[in-house]
Length: 245
Image: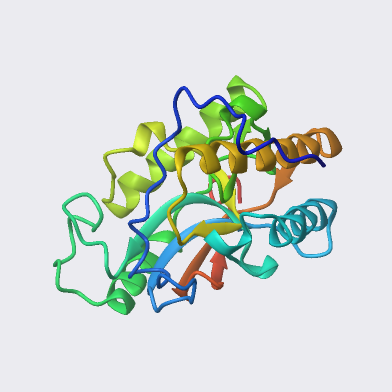
């Protein structure tokens, strides 16, 4: 895999890459910080073709010129978020359920959500089917963007997200435009525009290879998870079909 020349890259525009997670999820040295919350995700099972491909990307990035700017996640944390849930440090008007006081604890919120989700009907067929987004649309240094395989799968995932938002009374400003992805690392030191473009070019090539290796990515039932930091997402239970039972 070849790295583009860092001094010859034309950079007409570089996607804005936020460092808002510094001081929340990670410190400036890349050390993981306590960041409790809950979420609904599909884990990437370990020792599968997808997991193996992502670990290979991570290992190659660890030996790249960009490694010192990134904090890498452990493979057991790899997942695709279906619905964001809450985080203790993010309590804005659209980041907390409207039927729960803003000063409620995360454990209280988790119990509140769990009581609702136990009777929530997954209401769609499994697996969830996605593919790796085109290389031109891989605009984030640390995560691989995914897209549903077709219009029907897009409707299925968007409908599921909307029903979860209605069930949990939690709808973010970006709800309708949420981009599915799998995060492998977080940027912890700023990059210049040229370095950013070079890094995106490198990881874009890696993700393109993952897409060629795995034409369709199939994920199982979403899991309601709790987390204390970005290294582990502990499954409380799976969402399930109810109406057909």
